[in-house]
Length: 575
Image 1: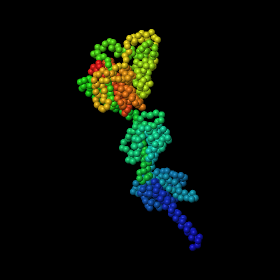
Image 2: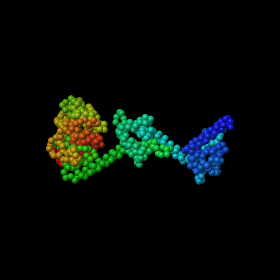
Image 3: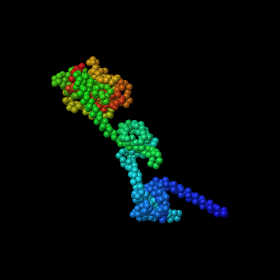
Image 4: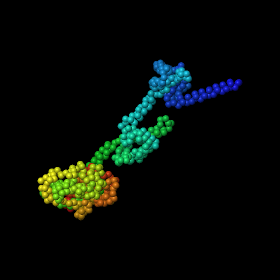
């Protein structure tokens, strides 16, 4: 053998080995495909048949390769012409041709498949055959539905949808979730949840970690969160949340890709439910208190029962202070002078004096007249009804004594309680400079203005340990309240006064008001019975509770009316 012939034989051997390697690589690629594949030569002979085609139709590679066409074994004869025409059209046309065919399995069942056929061309551009990739139609439809659902959830869903990766960071966020979180969709991606939520982030991360480890929980969870804001503290929100663990469908073992977090804001619904539940509870407490008080032989004991039932779920401490006033006359036998003072003196006479000044008409100018109703203990000038201009009842409260819900004003008035604007005379009084003003001023001066009432402690709940409220002995010693105390304001206004120490809770705030240590919120309500002011009931809260609001004041007024009726019946107002 010559050297040239040996070289040619070696080259042929290498080419044969390369072709064998390429053939094996192609076979491995075809068998590893997720789609079924069958290839035909130009004369229609089956040249390739992978494992997925074997799984769908049941024909093995040995049984399929070498057959001419599909008619009679993989396709019914009635459908063979249509399929052959489609394959021929794919060989003549550029690109892929997508069609749906009904193929025949080995056991005789028909399977609807979706095919993609494309021509296979040789080195010179000559058509060498056609390949056909197919999959079951229902599998393809399921995939398309999944993709469409995913796109719809991240575009048009009314629920917030956040895809959280395995590091607990948002990977995909829909528009609703971005609005709920208060940032843009792209700004959320990759950020820790702690940068988005000020409160509730621990609960959210705990739920996500549980889903990654154990799977989706059996029911939805309601999570209370607070969004982080640099400008002001935002209110808490309740998000009804569902979690779904995501795993890769391509891996042999389930590998978590993350968690799909779906949530909806139900804050308004939950608050309405809480308000309804609170109203039902308070109505039930009033009913129980009335039944229990009816069995008390002593009306003073009945008043203590009303106070005890009111404290449950409402306040930590309760106090009742009675005014040192003459004993009430029998019902229907009220003296004319007393009736005038109670019905008109406080409401008009003293209000007029406070508005126009005590000494000379117009000397002090118009003050801040406060009508009957609820107000806030803000201290400062003009804080209560009967305070002349520049002579407030007391200024120790300051801005920290404003209403917790922000409804109070800086001068302690409440816009919805019928207060008059500064500089305006009460309705029915003559204006400044009119002839009737001097006459009214003289009449008002004949009735001396009453000073701060002397309030004597009558009932008190235990401050150190739980227990029933106690009726205190009638010592007649007034409670050492400082001028401008919320109890005095409530007595003068014949309404409710709410006060709060504020977020800072300054040291000595409760002691300055002669309230138990640890008190940060107070609500003083006047005790009225038979047209008379008997005293003041005070409800106090510790830092664990929220400040009093208007609904709390309404409930306290209802309780105070029952306590006042019982004390009036007991004759306790004669102390």
